[in-house]
Image (cartoon, rainbow, N blue to C red):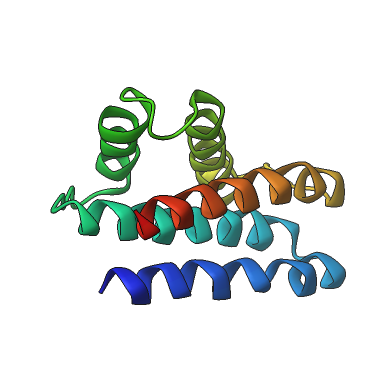
Length: 122
């Protein structure tokens, strides 16, 4: 299951250039978050943690990986930022993402997923 979740994280990340090129910026923010979410779920599964909600995943990543130093605080902040941006782009009536926002968030998501990949190998 964890392998499938991590694979899905990378597949979802690969969607971003197409979405950006087509001007689907809000959708790209959504997919950036979900790519990180899938990676986060993979590492939680590996450690027998099943939080059940998006907020729970964020909280468990913070508690079990960021607070313990297994993930840098900066990466924990990236995941929280993506969580907030995804929520805003999906649910706020007048929230519009931009190409610049995608350019800002893509490296953060890529770094988060790569760090999770390293942890999965331990």
